[in-house]
Length: 129
Image (spheres, rainbow, N blue to C red):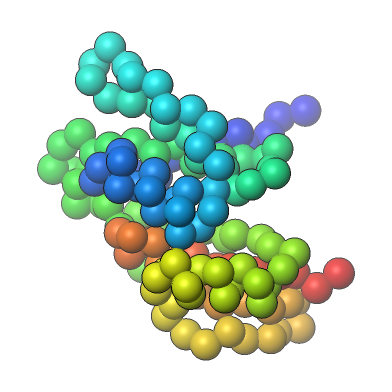
């Protein structure tokens, strides 16, 4: 059965992106392999997951650099599900993650919008059962 394995996230620098996603967000680094063209194949994924991951791809030209941090036109483009909203929110606050609002408790679950180190918007979301 087909599934989405990776989503590309264009970044300015591999090492700073790895540090943010593994440090502040607690993701696992699955791959960091050099490529013949001088780029790297860098994949991160939320811990313990066996689902989709992010391919962190360094911008190669001006057009790609212009998209770093605004890959979805200012909309929330990424959704990080959690089973421990309060714990993950507190951990991410302590790690210096920038939140754009106070946590909300909606009919569909607990949610708060944050941004990554480049300004891409994310939802931290604990869906209601």
